[in-house]
Image (cartoon, rainbow, N blue to C red; front, side, top):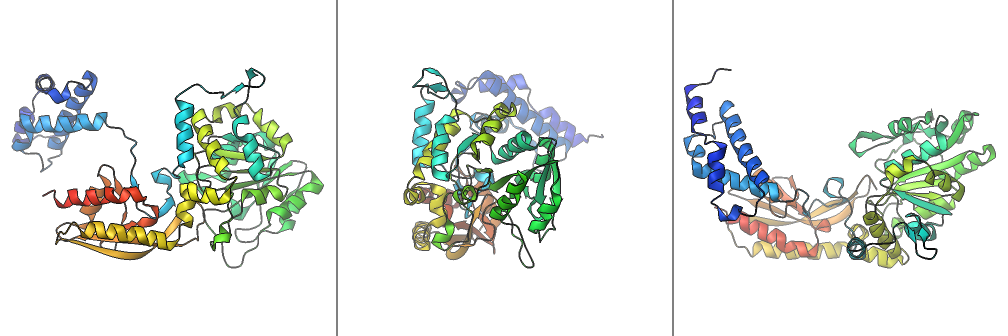
Length: 473
């Protein structure tokens, strides 16, 4: 690679690592910073500067390679290095269970229990009555059975793990019959056929994408058939000329042949959303009541708890699954158990659960309450009184998210912002890099914030962010 005279001159101007470190050592703001962080930060700034010069970056000129400029970049890099990478943010997207933004927010009860359990020792695997080693499943098994109506229950680290563990235990080297219309792919390109292959089970597809009949399952039965698997298509829907076999029908088909029936609910819920005028989503209780042998679902989607894969069903099969050596690799820790137990206790009183569990509260929040939040934010932003700022009250549509209730459109209210002296992309970028970040979306040349997913105490955070942006210059 040929280096120009200009590039050579710029490269010679870059101060050495030792010189920069010596100057950093005189900065009182850097006294508490670990030496390895300082060294790595200095090297990174110098390496980045060299790389920009080699790329002929127009932003690198002589004035950008002064000692003062390099020290400023080092200071910024140090702050970035010592700051947490996982940070809280304001979800103004209107997607309640946002996979990229941490999915469900935990209830106050769950957060309180997390603090209590993790600040002291606990009886995680200790039976207080017998004074002997106990099982961590006992922490939540009783309450899961109580709420769901199942004979037994256990929990692993997510629903994909739950499905994998069940298939590995109940159908390794045996056939599992699934409708072609239910061979779903979830986020991150995880597909049911791939999970099944990893478990050692043999996939046997029946029916067509849009229509599957009871006879398709009956014709598929052989001496190698171990399971009928029903996968709830929670992240998409097929409409038009369709037919599917219900879970109760599948249970009826499996019994004469002694074939167990398993349902992967995906985003499991204990609340019947149709009671509130929303689309029907099968509840865990309904699936158990049909006689399904095994039902799996997530803890951190519509349930509104921590990330977990919950398995409920017949005791004989659950006991078998618990003994699978793979289970140890997939087990959950005390933090998940503490949050899940507190979340499940709220479901003893459904109305309380709707009020206390943020996910349920946001999905079922009346439009009038969302409107009230939007009006409060509108007033806060208008009171900034900057002529370049224009603020609009908008009618929006929120989504449940998290691969659940795909066709549900929840009426919502939001605020659209435009700053005449800035591009809308620059506004979005500033808000995304604010501390804390405010995540919205760009639409119709407006930065849009859906208030359904914005908490009341976050309104002032948004106001402060816009004040900072508008006073930046």
